[in-house]
Image 1 (cartoon, rainbow, N blue to C red):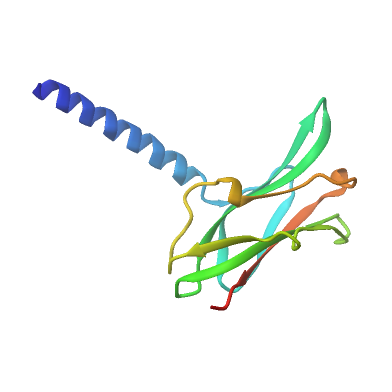
Image 2 (image 1 turned 90 degrees about the vertical axis):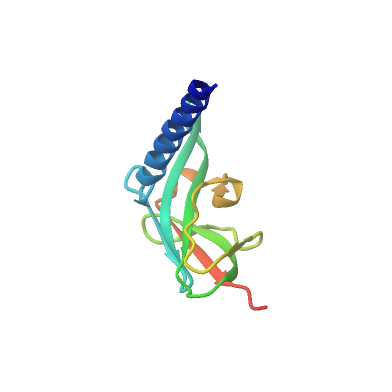
Length: 142
């Protein structure tokens, strides 16, 4: 019985070690194909970001930006998020402000994982022109 407990404990330690290593590798801003993701906010900063060009039969069918935030406001915050997709000449291609996502983050908290709430996509006619994305995070006043 004692050997089983030690074995289970060892497996848990190994799993936690592997998970922490993966999370550590996700830090910083990453981009694909030299595309950039920026955040326009005074309350959060990017802990991670990427732009993914999703293809079907070698044709781009969707551009998706993924992100994780760190609360830098110095207080608990509620905020809404939307993204603006731009071409290389800084012309706005798509603005998702009609359907913002809402977040709540405690003071100093950095998001750990990326779920559906941490992704915004565009699947319009100018997919191939997307060069960079600006994420807007605006505090909701209570």
